[in-house]
Image 1 (tube, rainbow over the protein chains, first blue to last red):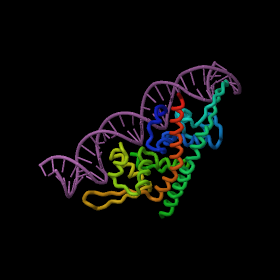
Image 2 (cartoon, each protein chain N blue to C red):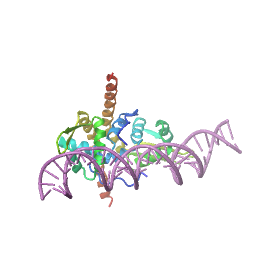
Image 3 (cartoon, protein in one colour):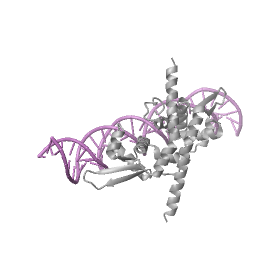
Image 4 (cartoon, rainbow over the protein chains, first blue to last red):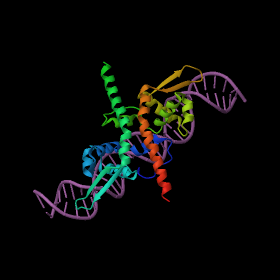
Length: 118
Length: 118
DNA sequence: TCCCATGCTCACCAACAGGTAAGTACTGAA
DNA sequence: TTCAGTACTTACCTGTTGGTGAGCATGGGA
């Protein structure tokens, strides 16, 4: 599906990071992991309302392949898997911060525009 | 198609900016306009190798609706249309810079990883 | 004994982003 | 008279993305 090949020849840096961040849940996963440090699969699922198990796993796998997150499996009887950010994941999250601020500012702009448009 | 509705309820700022940046050519258009200031339609098309006219127009329209770019039409006989960044477009471009740097660094990391893997 | 919970995998589908190729209205050049 | 170039529009088609729902292996609680 989405996972594999990518990492194609990139036109610019944005291209390269977009390749890694694009995906409906990835930025949210980044956010969850950045806030909580370590999260189990089920915790992530419950933390992202609306995500299906298939999608969560798919996105987590891609992010793992892309070196953004660590996946730690415990050989226990009720399966236990913990996800956490790698250094790359943390730096990506930091790089996304200004974009997040811009988005927040934009939402505010849109809101004030619609309210002022009496 | 893509253009319309969006601006849905956003979960976070990243969401809101992604909504506006996602699109195969948008970041490139942003880059082109940031570098050249003002560009005609044909100049943009030639500056983005591989883009189709339909896609270019579609992305430009969406970006115009999102308030990222200005579209200036000259009532001349061979049609002339100029595109340029708005303040929002410029600030978005600035917010994308760290992400671009991260992507560039990542590409370098991948390259050095593949060369060192003798 | 059955169900739930763990963390997955797999098969099938629907929606949509993006691509291709044609057409439009006009003018100047060949 | 036909072609190129301007900036588009339109119809159609395909590949990718994401969604649904089932199944799997195991063990603890009701």
